Length: 315
View 1 (cartoon, rainbow, N blue to C red):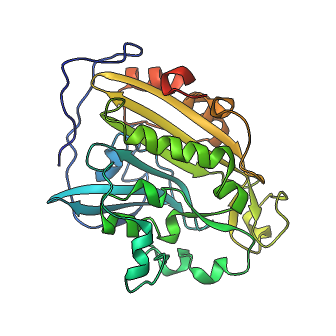
View 2: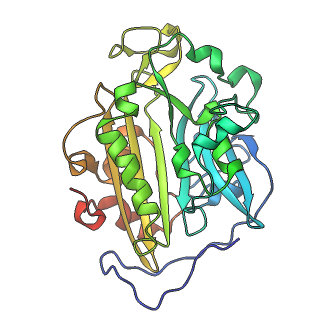
């Protein structure tokens, strides 16, 4: 699998540091790994195969780590990876990357109408235990859209990769006006713009998710906006009270990072995207997630403490 390409000129001078190229073994298919720290000590470097990839946050004990791969032009690529909370039945985060190959457009969501699915191929995640799965039935009576975390349009380099985005483990209940309008949708479009811009990136590392810790989600069967303090008090699907994104862009040996924080409310937020920008360090404080822990410490510190919207051409 092709990881990086060399360039003779670095177009970005800010946060320029020496890169550490990591060799990561390829395996086929997908896997679900229940973490046990007695055998896997995670000290800022995740120890389990694909979990060593640079886009991965630090894993939490007791959750399920899943990755999904697809073959494109004879090479295997990771479509996306998740950390799934089997009690909440919702992903803690979804991580993926854009490179020259995965940024290609070779499939369209509209093409599913011409397949056996006759439309969007939403389906339970086959790699999850039955008791942890979400299916169509859980979404029929709630007030929410089936919002992708790794967006369908983010994985159109192959049919198989696009189909994997319709696993319910990659789906989060979102208000329609949040999912289909406002600043959140604007940011999702902007990420694709960055991901497809090879002049801007060699690799764009993306982590997206919603807040699912106790006291940080709503009940899909209740009135939106009423916080559920404990999972035992919930009747429906966990609905995040906030959504977030964390990004690192790599161009040759230059790295820079940024994060975003959104309240899950009607309209998806208004105003400029820079209004929602925060540092990755600040996002870690708000979510309790250690993002990009597999980067060398010096790079991690640089990308996580800075927040420069101008570098991202934000309005």
